[in-house]
Image 1 (cartoon, rainbow, N blue to C red):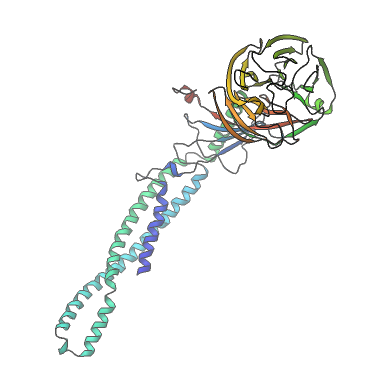
Image 2: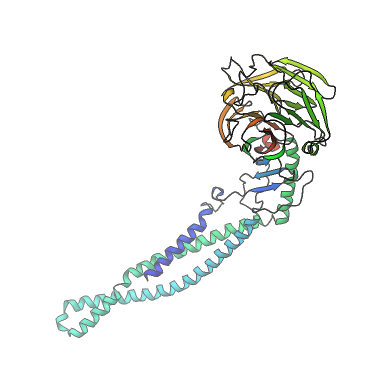
Length: 499
């Protein structure tokens, strides 16, 4: 009897676990349901068929949903990679979950049938115990009578009655337990009935979204993301890949780059060996020509350059004139200087270089927002100053003073208006500091950076490729970057306070 009572408790516990996903009103408790992920690989320029992933898309696209996107610039095959983490929805997960819900509903229905069988058996036993209770009450009265006058009866009869009474006494607590279990079974029946109604409603709701429709939604999302990534490349740096060595050439110090604003089919590479006194620039027609060392054109600049932090942007070369804080804009097509301007208060001649020296006082760079100069001044106590420059005139449009010492920085690069600084140019370096010009705030980071050839003398981001170009101890290498994006829907962008 005690074992049977324990079964009721176990059954109750099982049903309580089944009901954890639902609140008292029978509605789905979304905080207890796992949000699923959607990972998509976008090929350029066309969207391929629905990729096979370890997780299926389970969330519908809502008008107010913000999609979080992790995107890596390129894979080894040159395809754009985009990873989407869908936000929480107002409905329970669909598609793959529908089969689980159907199975759950079948289990509940089976349990309901089992409880009915158990209820019939319990009611039968209950009737039997009620009869025993009546007999016990009668025997108890007789036993009292015998106790009052037991001397008049034979000892044998008295002993038989006493033994019978002792056998019946344990049935009293069992009877009480049966009364409680009978009520519990009725509660089970009500709860199972409510659960079945809720699951059936959810199943009907899910049935409206079959796999074909979800597949269509995924393909539609892929197309939207592909269009979006053409326009949107800004995000927060999350990871830097291992380096890809393109070529080994030149001295220990130098610079190489591509134009982020070049036409889609144009892939010229510019190569500037050394960090001082040189005037010769090599222009290769393509990356293939650069790797082979053939098919190039030589340009002789009117002034020697200082450092290795040059920039090719929209067909022109921007560089720091040797032994000065003067910036030069040289156009390759016309072979002439289009603009030059002194960068006020900027240190030069190894006053505020990066940790490796090399006259790297002034670093010219570009990102999605335009061109920048990174340097240090006495007025900012030798800490890094970030200035956004006018592309045509080289005039400073706006400046930000940071708290990071320029001479303690290994290298730096801009992505989406944020300056990322490494803490060394040697092995063991990492991206240690980030300053956002959008919020005028900084944070300390810990992003690993693999310095394969032990000495970095140039590191710049190219917004077109979304890759880092580096000169690593006479090796020209590339680093892929992973950025974190938050893509807002049109309705989000119209909301007050939203950007």
